[in-house]
Amino acid sequence: MPSYTAPVKDLQFVLHEVLKASASDISGYSELEPDFTAAVLEEAGKICSDVLAPLNAVGDKEGCSLENGVVRVPTGFKEAFDQVREGGWTGLDMPEEYGGQNMPYVLGTAVGEMFSASNQAFTMYQGLTHGAASAILAHGTDAQKETFLPKMVSCEWTGTMNLTEPHCGTDLGLMRTKAEPQDDGSFKLSGQKIFISSGEHEMADNIIHLVLAKIPGGPDGIKGVSLFIVPKFIVNEDGSLGARNGVSCGALEEKMGIHGNSTCVMNYDEATGYLLGTEHKGMRAMFTMMNEARIGVGMQGVAQAEAAYQNAVVYAKDRLQGRDVTGVKNPDGPADPLIVHPDVRRMLMDQKSFVEGARAFILWGSSLIDAAHRANDKDADGLISLMTPVIKGFLTDVGYAMTVEAQQVYGGHGYIEEWGMSQFTRDARIAMIYEGANGVQALDLVGRKLAQDGGKHVMAFFEMIKSYCAEQKDVEGMEPFIEPLKKASKDLQAAGMFFMQNGMKNPNAALAGSTDFMHMMGHVCLGLMWARMARASLDALASSPADAAFYETKLATGRYYMARRLPATALHLARIESGADTVMALSEDQF
Image 1 (cartoon, rainbow, N blue to C red):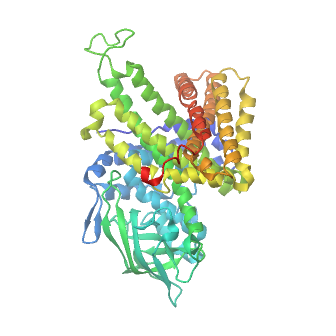
Image 2: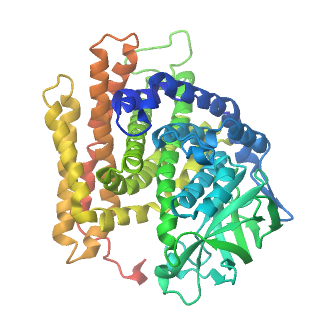
Image 3: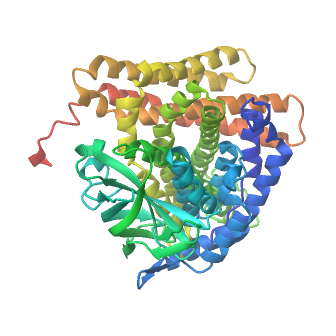
């Protein structure tokens, strides 16, 4: 069975030596001293390695079951959920007034990676709750916050988001779920939602559904959508639970992965709901939850890649297969370990360089969220808005590919269920689809985010890279990082110029290259992260640290990314500049 070890040292490195968190003037960051964050991460790591990781295969094998309207979760999940709740992990970065610990989002993200890596299906129960609570925090009335948030922050009550319907996925303007106004100010919701993660289960006393629906007489399409709070049990004025609401689980989806999470078909039969935010502005409120979820989903891609990589390394060191072409390395054995072979090294280096670069990218993005929310930094808000589709789309596309490479290290054993590697691949696959399929993320990036605020944020990103390269160009040891980063950035700018010159007269010319652009930008972001980590490592080595091997390993891994992964930007640019003609060449009947 696969194992998991929390990457506390690497998380600490990014937080303190790359981001220099405790030196930041963002509110709450002064508390993020290395000793404090180490204690938090180590404690979280223990519950992830000792409690959640052993349940990962259990959840995958058993799945959830629906019995007379009640969803049963896999063996051990409820006890583990109680343990997570009792440890206060569900409210780590939520406001103290509602029972949270008010830690910065960046620390919550670091902890969240470990939870997702150890058991993604399990962690989704609390993750969806966090997102729903964030939406109520941002858009709810004082009464709604007081009623729902304390129990949701503690995960005594869990939460969901209900968007998709059988006939409409991304195009939410087609939804049919209706919300009829009542004399007391509430609404009666009727309709069906599908693919609802954590929609029904036995681990919480109540489930608070956030449901998109249309109020009759409102505008057509997406402009007529409103968001509602629909609890599984009605909450009485004194906070106690009352009657069962008109919401039920009609079926459980049979899925490729995340079997331990209850993905439900939810039926609403005149269920009582309460408007969250403003009528017909439901997407504005829902996007508070969706944008947070997209960062979290990007993190899931990295987390699954990390867990898969850890096990692939162990296997590559233990499995004896063939001889090293440069000379025998294991003379006392019948063969050398797999890890001596260059192509196995290539797969492991792909994984290692991606995971560590992506981890830094996610944590940097999380620090931008903190700057936006805690310091009202408008530039940081614009930059993370630009980066969100890249974090979600690129990191889950590549994270999935890295789980496949980890599986490949095992050869035939990677395809056999008893080794457990296929679960990482199957669980990672959904991250490319939910919270907006990755093609939609690419369209959002190219069609909306590049031009946002007159292109201010993408230009600021290019200037950030240019300035960093200028600052570091004469630093000894930085050349293998700066020159490739400059080249990749120029490729990315050339792609943006192609869109500007061709997109207006032929929108397909831009949209046909949107996924390539998203991947280009992802590579450039990881290149920037590796350059920053390289500088931090060089600075550390200058002081002759006791753990010099850690920093030397970091530099070698970064050099691999810059030499072997970052040049992909040239391929993506060539594809983009080929335009849309070959993509759109066939008529529909030729497919």
